[in-house]
Each structure stands twice: as C-alpha cells, then as structure tokens.
Length: 511
Ligand code: 3SK
Image (cartoon, rainbow, N blue to C red):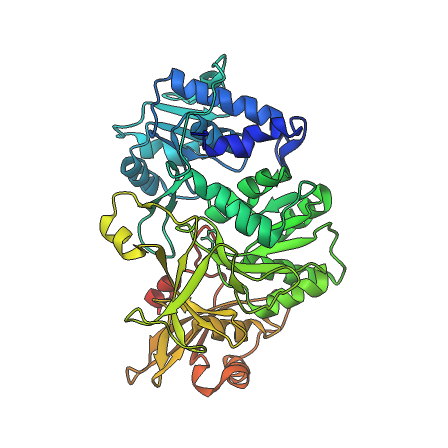
C-alpha cells in the first residue's frame, strides 16, 4: 500500500516538485519569520522524531494551543508524520474550557504559545494525562521549551497511514454548548483541497493567501494551510486580532492575492473604507466568506470598492470545509450558491422528506470530507452523521435557479402569525440601512404572548442614529409587514463565537 499519510502529499511532495526553496508561510507581525517548503519538510520530520523519542505512540493526542505562527504548521504536520493526532484548539478559550477539553481528549502532549501560558497554566494543574507541556518561546516552570524538545531530534519518515485513518481532531462548540471533538481522517484534508480549494477557488502556485480566520478553526485550517499548501502557494500568517487597521496594513504591505474573511469583518472594512472615501490599496484577486451568511448589501458594497468578488459559502467543522458555495464569475450575493463539486445537498422537512422549491428545510450534506464522528458523544454522533448524510442544523430554501438561500439555524427560525420568519432575512434588511453596521434578530413574546421579531443593532460611527420607528418602517418596506422587528435595541457589539457566529441564544436569554 502507498503511504497515504497526508503529510507526504501536503509537505514532502514539494521537494520532489522543486519547491524546496519556496516560502510556504511568512509572518506578517512579530519577528516576521518565514519558512520554506524545504525547511517545513525538515522541521516536521524532526518534530515527529522528537515525539517518537519522547515515547509518543500512534494515535496519542497532541493538543495545540498555538497562535497563528510558523510553529503551527510544523506541529500539526509533524504530529501527523509521527502518526499522532494533532488537536488544534481555539486560542481564545477560558482556562475552564481548556481543562475540560484536555481531559476529554486525554492529550499526552500539549504545545502552547508563550503568550497564552497565563490562561493555560491553571487548566493543567490537576491533569492526569499530560506527559509533556512544550512552550513555544519560553519554558515557564513545570514545562519544557519547544526548542529544547526538538533539539537534535532525529528526522523521521512519515508513519504509514491509510487515507481512511484518523488524522486530527477539531473541537467545535457550534453556536452553543460545550465543545465536541470532531474526528477527521487523512483523506479529508486532500478532499477539501481538491474540491473547494482547487475547483471553486482555483488556488494557484503564484497566490499569496491571507486568512483572518485562524488555523485552529476548520475554515482557517483550509484557507491558510491545506489549500495553499496543496497548490504550492504562500500563506501570510498573522497572530493578532484582525481589525480594519491591521487588515488594511497587511493588504498594503504583504499584497495577498486571496483574502479569506468573515461577514463581521467585511462589514467593518466596508464601513471604514467608505468613511475614508478613498480606493483601497490591495492586490486581491479573490475573497472568501464563511462562518455566517454574508448579507447581500455587504458583498455588493465590498465589490464596488475592492473590485474583487467575495465567494460566499457555507461549511462546517463536521464537513471540514465549505460544501455549498458561490463560484467566481457566478456570484449571487445573499445566497450560499450551489453544492461544491464532489458534494450533494438535500433540504428535508421534519419527517426527512425532501421539501419543494421555495420551501424551507434542514440542509443535509454528503461528501468526501465528512468526519468519522464525535469523540465520546455516541448519541450526538448518531443523530448528526446518518449514513452518508450529515445533518447541518441550518435551515435553507432553494430558489427556482437552484441556489440555496440561508434562513437561519434550526433553533433560530420562528413563526409569526403562523408564517416562518428567517432572522437572517430581517438582519439583511436592517444592514441595508445606511446607519446600521450589524444586526441580529431573535424571537420574543409580546404582552399577549405572541412571538415577534426583536432586533439588536450595532450602529456605524459618525452617522446620525435612526429612530426605532424609522428602522421598523425601513424593514416593513423591504420584506413585509409581519417580519419587521417590534423591538429595536442598540448595542455596542453582538455576542459572537471566536469564529464569528452570532450567539443568538445569548440575545434570547437577554430579552
Ligand atoms: O461556518 C462555516 O461556514 C465553516 C466553513 C468552513 C469550515 C468550517 C466552518 C464552520
């Protein structure tokens, strides 16, 4: 059997194809370090050797609380080469959640960026499974320096692996709940790179990719790591918080050709650029958006200013990346487009019967990158992964042209006077108002206990605030009498997950 360990195709293949000297990753901040494909092959082989020397066996978990920095791909692919299971974790979690995840995964090695040590330290105090804690950039008491751990380690060949064999886990909390370990196989990385990465985005060797979604998030893992590496391209990595200021700077200085963002950030970038009244400085040929549906208005305003399309799509941690998407040259803002080549989707009602065109149903997907299941969540695995089909928990409608229009999460949809209301439709109408930067809509019961939409909005700086009545009329005119928000509350910011999803359940609780 050929060795199907994904690290061979993503990392070592580039040596045979003459890219040893090509930059694979370069940092846009800090020391601005870079690593070539040749160095990456060597360093991943040495990290794998260091794990083996330490006695780490196949399938043991290597937890990563690592910022977007050069060591991220080294540890991820190095662990894969060792036959171990890298488990990249969200770098913005609390100590309590880290404690729970480290115990749940029973990781035996933890790699941490020095800057995150303060939060992580209390989380490992009583841990019974960790045999080594490696800190990148330092060695606080009770830990080992990552550099010392790797020093003089033998470079080893990638462990033999089947493409169907478990490769890595990602922890997903969705928009609510405690994080679940989603287990992915070696073959899924290549499947997403060859479908969405190559056939939809068309990532090329001469591209430079910049993703504001961090690599611990499935969307960022593909954008910033597996897709550019599949093509032999270069990724610009940034460990800081993406703000309009940092993103504009990186676009001007690093000149990425592909930009991967999320709707909140696109909205903020458009508002800043419109305020400046100048043309943006950039080299971008293509953009992507996911994490939440992109409001039509934001996509259109972005394209007018940047003259580059945003390819909006929907994916999930369970499917590893995007499976429903617009296509470059065929963008319909306000829709999630059509199934990505290699994937099939269905919309079903509560009896699992296909719904008709124009009706709302739950989105199911099947394709080559679905996860093996959740770790230690048998019941949830059985209800999510049903044979070849994976339930997404998203409600969609299919238009006459066969495009899919997002309506909301299954839990977020509600009926007003017996008619379904999609919070996303009301939110899209609200952000078309020139003073509204962002909006979130939830159901709330009125004094007669009848359910009606309630809106939370973030206003743009420097524009006169509209009255609630003005906004209600604005929505009535756009989408219909019964859908307008009966309550409008102005807030400083909307509650979101680290990956940019609005946590509507928090707004419901606040109401
Ligand atoms: O939220 C999404 O749309 C998404 C896209 C790609 C990978 C993962 C996720 C959750």
